[in-house]
Amino acid sequence: MTITALAATDLPVLMAIEQTAQLLGISRSAAYRAAAAGQIPTVRIGRRLLVPTARLLEMLGLEPPADPAAVAANN
Image (tube, rainbow, N blue to C red; front, side, top):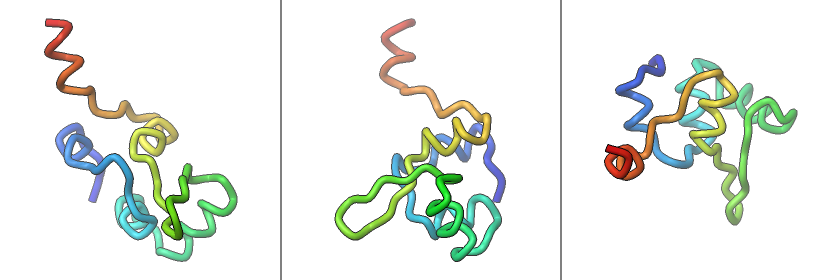
């Protein structure tokens, strides 16, 4: 799976580490190691470790999808 403009709009606001690993094409354990090393941005909610999609896309040098409400307000 690669990140395209269409796919980026379909991504959730927060992703599980497993989803992030699949998206990046790395193993689950490699994703957890990268998160522990600070190479993947994470937030902890309860016992779950989640990845903020916008921060991940920004880290990869990709633009997060525009907020449709903000785009409509500017037009």
